[in-house]
Image (tube, rainbow, N blue to C red; front, side):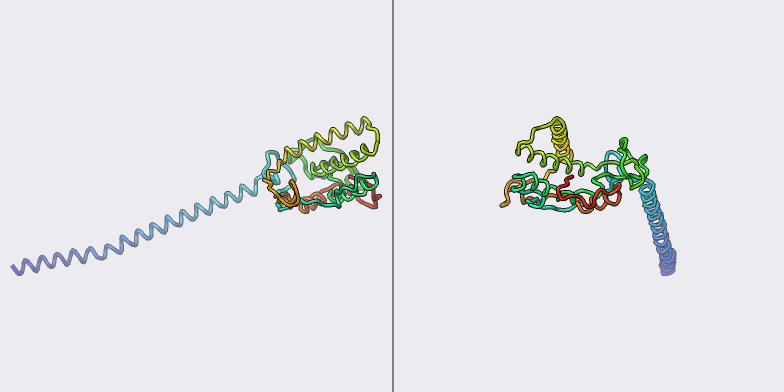
Length: 243
């Protein structure tokens, strides 16, 4: 009986001794498998990231998220508060033509040095219409494009100038009527195109004034327009010159 018990104990010990060493084997194998899978996963993620970077680098530059390709980059945004500014518009300017012109002369600093004409290198890369012919420098003309914001400023300045002349009794001409109609229609469409959706509330400054708007950083816009502009128009201009 004791012999049978001893043999049974020996068998149990043998079973345990054979089983215990096998555990680390299984655990080591699982750890190794996890390490391999983790390495494969990391390699796949790195490869995917490299592919995305390649696609971004190879993608034709279109400046910003637009329907059509444009050389104009995505400009930074900035908060502006709409407030009256007598340098650009004031009640007294309407009483005589001279004061109107002197005030509108200040608008020149709001425009680019080339009055909004932009020279585009390799225009065939972008979805652009047929260009104007503009003075690229003192010696040659070349293709150029007018940036809308500066055309809008010209139109608003033109309307203000002839508004005062009309009140002063100047007879309306066909050219002024045509140009004014163009400018009103152009500005109407420009307002609808950019469609500022700021929600305005009551302010002490009055309707619309004192409200904050998220806008294109105008200084950044001017810098880009000047860096890519045609021949500058600015110089020693008379103080009654307008846009």
